[in-house]
Image (cartoon, rainbow, N blue to C red):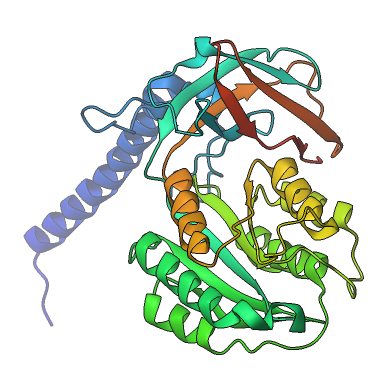
Amino acid sequence: MYITEDAVSTWQGVKILDTLGTKYIRRFFCLALTSIAALPVQAQQSTFVASPGIALPAASSYTGSDSTDPLLTIKKRVDEVNVLFIATDRRGKFVRNLNQNDFAILDDHKPPQSIVNFRRETDLPLELGLLVDTSGSVRGRFDFEQEAATSFLEHTLRAHFDRAFVMGFNGRGQITQDFTDSVTLLRTGVQKLHAGGGTALYDAIYRACKDRLLKDKSDRPIRRAIIIVSDGEDNQSEYSRAQAIEMAQRAEVLIYAISTDDSGLVLRGDKALQQLADATGGRAFFPFKMKDIKNSFAAIEDELRSQYVVSYRPADFDADGRYRSIEITALKKDLQVRARKGYFAPRQ
């Protein structure tokens, strides 16, 4: 093959241009990267844009996600406490037009460092546990209690928003329907319950809170409660009443209790139900007639949709895992407040 002198010159020129082009391209990218690195850190981080009408929380209240995480993760401060509470008048009716200046708050006997948020909550998602005493002592009213419990679930739960589970307990607890938003499945779970045996009330509360409501606990705001239908007697539990209350407080669960005792006397079981409700910010009901059981369920439904929530930062807070007391009192005359008595600080 014969190659001319002109062809050789042309080929050498292309090679030189190629070498120069590569060199200048590399130099261009180096300059570009250097310029980007020199930009202010704030400018590099300003890629998150809030939607119109949505207020961003203060940066000091949240921690960002790890740099390897492609999604923005917002975490609540460990020293921020959220408390749901009920405010009622003398007749027990919910009072709806209050603000934070109508209440005094003490955390571990000290006023909070600051109030972060105060609002009335009527539409939080619900996570409920229905705990039904199936021991032999409730046999006479059992069918009616099943009917009332089913009616409560039908009126309270909203599909794709709320969820509940059903647990029967006598000498041991048994989940007949796990968490679901299907009223049909929950109704079947209630119908599977059969009366007979002893009573292990505190074990049922402990396991329901630990294995369901605490285990599945998420960071999003949710109202968690268990509704107990029982005479309050306990003769077979391994856990104590204090341990059951502690687990409910750790899971931030309200306990509502409906007594099945129709003797008209204040018995030991009624006192136990009252203590469970008082310690967690719930309420105990003592219906004398069977028709009053439905009224009790209706009152619970109303309370679950009508509460206040206050978020605050305690004074002298330590993430030491210990129990801290909560006191919320009304400053207006004739107002009554129900809230949980305390909480366990996170441990770090």
